[in-house]
Length: 352
Image (cartoon, rainbow, N blue to C red):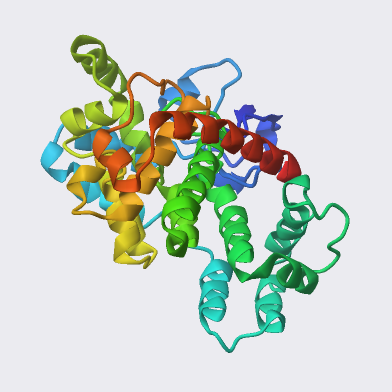
């Protein structure tokens, strides 16, 4: 049986006589470690095909439930919010590291000990610290040295970036995003958010970076439902000349920004973060939440730089309210967008 990982798109030929017929089995992809599920029960559509089969991961009860829910819109959001509970929690290393760095009496040794407990994260942090982007190529040989050289502010951003890459690096079939596409866009928005915060609200620099990085996390929970509604969504967008974000609201009754807010609450992030994510497409409705204006303009910059998500294109100028709130002109954002793209390229190259 030919098995295809839907996340990294690598295929594996498994001997039929080694598979437990009549059961549903799961195993991690040898390449990306994402779960692959196989339905080997008789009488299913997959087994009716006598040719080599491309079995996709995560095609389990959760996805089947989404089809039923689309016919019963009243239960849809409740089901999706339940699915939110199945998404990975915020990595413990990030939570603990933030706690330590928030303590003015903490030491570089303490933060190093926390990071070193997760070897995969520690290795990635060393790769990023030694990247050309930070100008320390070949100079950082230990986590303790990285913490001292980078400093707490930059270190928190690096930890956030590294720990979120696996969560945001998944393929999203419904949104038409290949593995890594959402991660690249999110990193661009994070870099842009940091730039804007540095210029207008330096105290929000780290918060802006973190919110920019997870602003589209709601798409992770919505993806199977978007996949099942794709034809209806495309028809609405074509007929009404609307964006996918607007189509989500019309077809499903809510959008990925609303679900993103629920994710923030699950991850116990500050309320200001949740509000910024909820209104990152319409910051004027956020009751003067500065982070929402920052992330909105950073999203504009990412799309302008060609780092949008799939069909996102630059079709209009940014909202004047956000430009006025942060005292920027469109040409300022256009110039900065090119710098953001270069930064993203350097970071991606350093951890790939």
